[in-house]
Length: 232
Image (cartoon, rainbow, N blue to C red):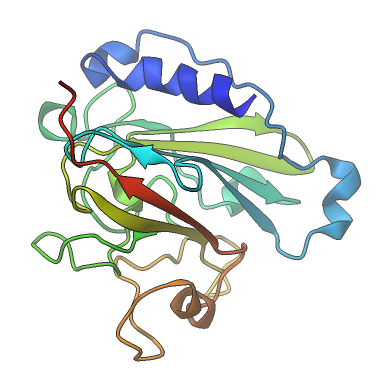
């Protein structure tokens, strides 16, 4: 099921302009790992994060780019307005930035469409506009939308095709994903920072720092490799 979902999104985002992709309709497939109302009582956190791509030990991309981050977030017992989700988006760099039919800003930092999400990569550059591995990459995601809604849960899918080698080439890397807790106690998950601080002052930004910040989900970490070889 996950492979079918990834294939659908890649067909939308790759091989042409993002604007052209808006003409197609995406049918969300059920996730094999998504929760059902029957097992909500066994969850330790109110949000479940599924990282569909990259998978552990994947060798991704070419020349450090063209690889995907594909997520599904499952919010348990939350009405959609409490998830922090504000609107679907189809966005990207240049002419695709913040344009119809589903506008969204495209830059590092907190995502205005899903402002509780944090996505980190351990090898991200410190060259502006990035601030190293603590940079929240959530606002670089291209395609965000609601894939399932019931009285008991909301599922949101979020996909990013990495257009530049911002995390290096021919290097091992670790993707870290979580949803930040309701830090201001307004009932909405919309408190992700633009940059996650090194809260424990150990010289790295990782899951331990997110735990100190406060999270509503487990922290999911995926080790993978970014390929440096060209396509041909």
